[in-house]
Amino acid sequence: MHTRPPTTQLALLAAAAVTVALLAAGCTGISDPYASGTTRSRSATTPPAPDAGDPAAERGGTIPAATRAAQGKLVQRSVQPTPQAAVARYAQLYANWSAANVVARQRQLAAISLGQARTQALQAAASAKADTVLARSHVANTGEIVAIVAGEGPAAGEWVIVTREQTSGRGDYAGLPPTLHVTYSQVTRTPHGWVVSSWAPQS
Image (cartoon, rainbow, N blue to C red):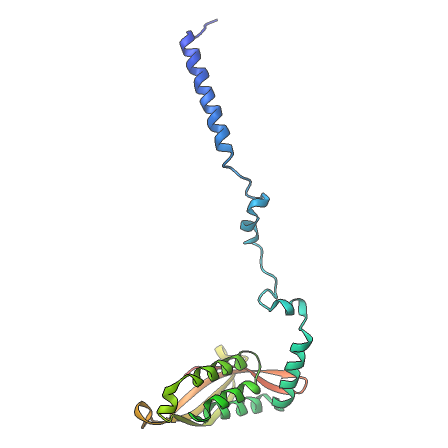
């Protein structure tokens, strides 16, 4: 049997002690990736609920009574018998305005629409109210509907509206030629009729 010199044994014992100390210190920095302290990383892989984007009060298929009542009043005074009629009414109002009535016109559009179209009209009303150039330049817009057709291809599920419009006024707005504009629109069917719910000018 061979024995190591005493100095060698002491060196081995010291090295072992250092190793144990390092392991003990290192273990405090290792955590279970599935422990409760890191559940946030696990939840990132969990798909959101289908209605996660809805207002909290409307999740689970529930719409507050006040919201339903407001939509009911809106629908009763703004619906049309056909999708084409709803789109045509909105397009006529949208394309014909002046600096003197543009705010009222946008609010009128908001009153006969739902969803994105309503929100957009309210935002446009607020923007026009603060726009001093419109009044100073006496800007006005007149337009007529050229076509309203059901969209195909990339526009499937939407209505495509073509209008011929001319903007007039002073300064930069003087002498502008008539131009064709294309808009995509969606409508919503309610128990009372059809109403515009999306309005997206393309040109």
